[in-house]
View 1 (cartoon, protein in one colour):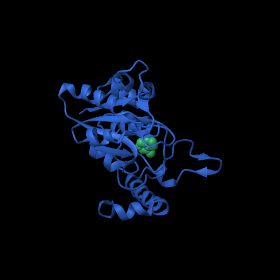
View 2 (tube, rainbow, N blue to C red):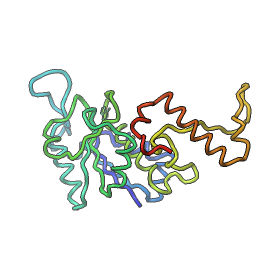
View 3 (tube, protein in one colour):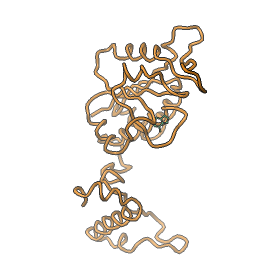
View 4 (tube, rainbow, N blue to C red):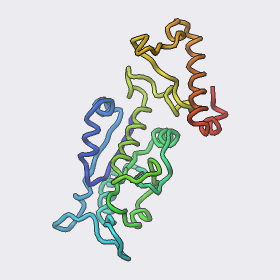
Length: 234
Ligand code: ADE
């Protein structure tokens, strides 16, 4: 199983540098995920390679032009492979684990559009975009981090992507609730002891404790999740 992403940005290096480390690098090396990065400036026609211009109606900031996006998307799609074009914007639907799963297993390549400046010409949305994603109710300087958040969270859902480092199935939100507390050696640190049950060797009791702690933590910190996932709880 593989995931394919195309990323369109004026800062390819931001995307490429993150992909050169750790689990993402290994997933790329193993062919579990494939990411192609395109520089929007390569699709400009003027000698200054302008990707932005002044806003009609005035006001501060610049607006990203429609033509470079149009040319780039046409060029990327010229291979005939079907893609979902996703714009990263605070105005999109809010990304979460359910959307990560939906997009990871929909069997379609994602073409991620990273905006910068004050915004993107509305006609990019009207003509070229299939879906809009926000990673939360705050405003970043661009869509590159949100694109990486999507790539990262979807890659770790792929079988074999995490290797020995664990299973994506048990972590927070995959079960619908928060994760249980984890401990490793030493058994005591600054007077704080690892709970006896984890050292007991009693696997049934350990499993029970973990379920209880996960529920307790979720009730304390995110009671909204309990409401949302009532049917699916352990
Ligand atoms: N671009 C700027 N802020 C963003 C956000 N919160 N989510 C997605 N794209 C963005």
